Image 1: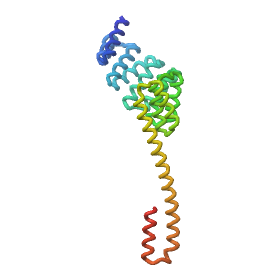
Image 2: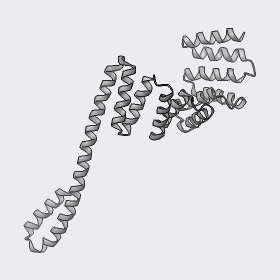
Image 3: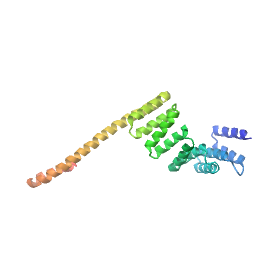
Image 4: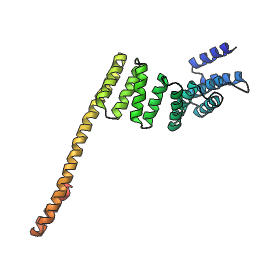
Length: 235
């Protein structure tokens, strides 16, 4: 009976009839669904975009079986897609505690940390996931994106080149991204030079004002006005 139900649910998932899958699971479970059934219902509602209901069912499953990696992992994804990033990270932390070498757990926790602005931790998690499963072009691509956001250009390019090696079909997409990285690096250099120039002008302006104050008593009104105008332009 269980095998027949699972096959029906699989077919509904394949045809993306997720709400029908959830309803079928609930109907066959009766008044007291087991944790596995609750997990599968949560997965179906999650796929259907019904995040609140999905989270409710995943939490119900964990109340009965609190040490199941897959349900903590699923709850983390649900909460993240619902916009509850802090709660999502807690669920994914728990999932990684239960399965420290899970590629999926580390990778998704890294993505969540990145969304929370935890760049260094995010990169560490994604790198660890890629060490365990190195044939993941999307993983290297996302690692490159993270590194770009942190202005770690050399590492970013290395990650994106690795993504390209693993997925040559994405050549055009990755090439465009590499061009964008190059532009961003140039802009950063220009900004850096501009920032240094602004600092130099600031120092020059301070010095100019000091000289203006010392000379002011020796100048005519017209000369003082001209000096003030120059000082204003510099600062």
